[in-house]
Image (cartoon, rainbow, N blue to C red; front, side, top):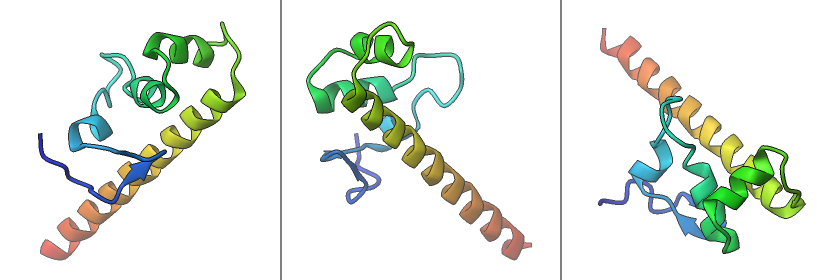
Length: 90
């Protein structure tokens, strides 16, 4: 798999294109839990328990929220850039 954003790092983990945009729809599980699990050395199911409120861990929840926010920002920037390019192409 190719790296799309070599300098796009979250918690020291270089994200691949697939990891960055996987499960953008509601069909599958959120890949953010897998990324956070890898960073903190826990299982993705444990991270999901924390995000669902069944367990408490402020550090993991903070990492999860930061990654979710940065992913949203990145997607918004890409959409904005794409629409700007389409506007000037016409």
